[in-house]
Length: 368
Image 1 (cartoon, rainbow, N blue to C red):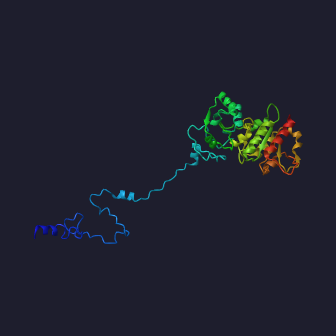
Image 2 (image 1 turned 45 degrees about the vertical axis):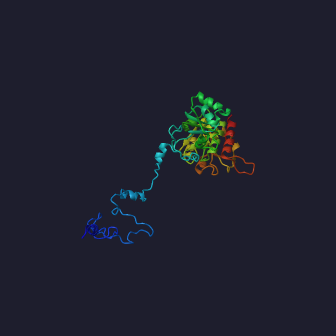
Image 3 (image 1 turned 60 degrees about the vertical axis):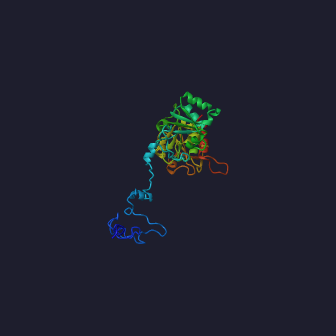
């Protein structure tokens, strides 16, 4: 046999080296002996697409490994989770969740924010909005003011010139803030381009109010379940104007001093002592024990407000009921007298802040 015939017949397993049929049967096969060729239909490849080479059947010079191929084919990854801080953590970092915070929207305060962390208890009053409220806050000087935010466009406005002068005299820092940033932090509809951040209001002492001032009998007002901040602010403004010695507020189911209250009160919160009590009926009993007349206002009462002349000159406490519901049952039972404001028109009652103005000034008229 010639050398050419030996080379073609034995070196490639006895078959044609180009045919591929004897590729796995000869000793010179680089991929192992006796391996049968893949049958059609076993690879699972769709018609018209070439079947992917397996890792074992790939060429020796291939650099693609199995993990990399799986990664390129889109291996499922674990879903991303959103970390939400707990309520205690939110309180620690200072996320605002108060009632009028729709404008604020739970924004996390950055470092250097002048507003301190608000306590869950107490009267409130840390954020003061409106020019008149901020002006009276500065004039009263009863609370520490951390900083005042003023809209940049108002620094040359004559309407706030006196505020800037008082703030400078009291060494209160004033920051120029963009209008949109100030409006985003505001919790009232119209902050008038100014917000002050101050220490919370201090609670008054009921015992001190009962003793009166300068030897005069006390003149007090108690609010029973008023939840509208605009009404409470107007009540406080009326009380300050009429010379009321103090206002009693229940600690539950009633609004306290919010930015809306401070703006509606126009600075009255800085001068009228406010007392928080756990239960208004219990506080009324304490007033009666110290010979203070307790007079409740209710539109269904038979006696008129203008018939309390004799009681007005003594120690007296006017009790104002909530909007719509009026006086609660326990409070009504503990009042010494229930009076109403005569209505000469077709309406049956007045707003609670308007009723407060009439009642407080009627008492003030007799005590003058």
